[in-house]
Image (cartoon, rainbow, N blue to C red; front, side, top):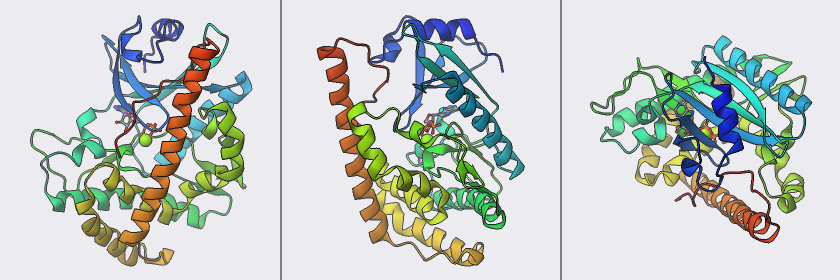
Length: 320
Ligand SMILES: Nc1ncnc2c1ncn2[C@@H]1O[C@H](COP(=O)(O)OP(=O)(O)O)[C@@H](O)[C@H]1O
Ligand SMILES: [Mg+2]
């Protein structure tokens, strides 16, 4: 993968974190998750998706993260998941902060799961997409179930999966289709109980005055849930609320509960209910709304009152 280091450094030097598409180096935003920005450099000859992570305090910390990122890819591939070609590189900002750029081969945006939900595609094919996601996750949890020393986790959200070869002009999904897993920059595995990624990094983009509070209240719970297949699946189903397609949930739950009782019966997973997904979603939404509001307040304090640069890009309020 050919990363244009010079251009990235220039991008970092001249970044406009409030309106990143208006900075000196032109970029195009490909998507954003809850805390990150994914973009491509305009006019890149080989399109690469970059994720900017300005959360590291030291070289040791960023190097540990890059190592975990590499190993996580190896683990996923060994478990027969498909992941994009990847690379990672860090630069120093002009303030001296370490900023990591995770690079991936760019995947056509319209082939990512949350986009597919809005295409004119049949209910049955959406069920097939969910079944394919469950089968990918089965590989992970079957392994973790067996292994005494290595536990692997994953973020199963619909926006983390793309359908290879999917054509939005003629949208179809069959059981023979293959998925690619995108969200590899949060390496989730534990060796002998030790988390590969420094858990505090999950919170690094939280405002400073919230960090200690979140750490005390949620951190263990937040990280743990990515290792629990049932909870990861509830999170996946809750995405249908976020994507404004709640009418699909009963059918999706049937697919998932049938899958658990047939293809993954050895896990003894208690069937998921609509009510618990709704409750989870409402609680999750509250936490994120508080989190996002506080970050906007934090940015105001940092930039307007303290006249500092704010290191993060904040997406506009995500509609839920
Ligand atoms: N390699 C890629 N090619 C194209 N789009 C991507 C790629 N990786 C991520 N994206 C887009 O950015 C969004 C967020 O990326 P993701 O890795 O899931 O980050 P997060 O950890 O913030 O959820 C994805 O849902 C997708 O729409
Ligand atoms: Mg994601």
